Amino acid sequence: MNMSEEKQNTRIEICKLGFSESLKGLAIQDATLTTVRQCAGVLGTFSGLVATLLGREVIPNLPNTENMMFLDWFWPALSLMTLFSSLVLVFLIIKPRSGWIFHMNGNEVIQQFADNEAGAVELDVMYKVLTKFTQDNHAGNEKLLNHLFMLLSILLALLLTQIFSWLMALF
Image (cartoon, rainbow, N blue to C red; front, side, top):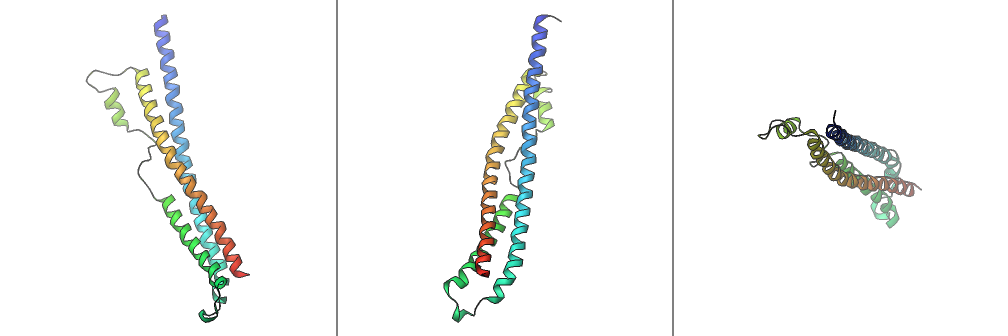
């Protein structure tokens, strides 16, 4: 093997490594998305459970409408609003949405790099193009994940507010 072939093989291996790392990044994002959605489902379930257990203690003990004072209805109303808001956020987090890209279309890769009119593309060039494609997808997915993390944080705050307001209504 001469020096230029050795350099070319080294270049191919480096490009292959970069592509492999890009794919790992997308796989980690895919797993993170699944985890965020599972957490939202758990928090939504817990929110419903809190409303069921504490709400059934509070609501039957509310005074009739003629004798109600501001604080008599404020805490239960806040609890129910946070429950409803929590369920809306769970839906927004769990629902499928477009824009996520965690893989490539195999047919398109073959058409672009192996079956084009100019002949097969060199391996290092293919790896560079695919690495850029996966990195661009990673950046786009990152924006969507950050949005979901924010929604998940709000969901947790709503759950804590709901628990606090049910407890305030109870005592």
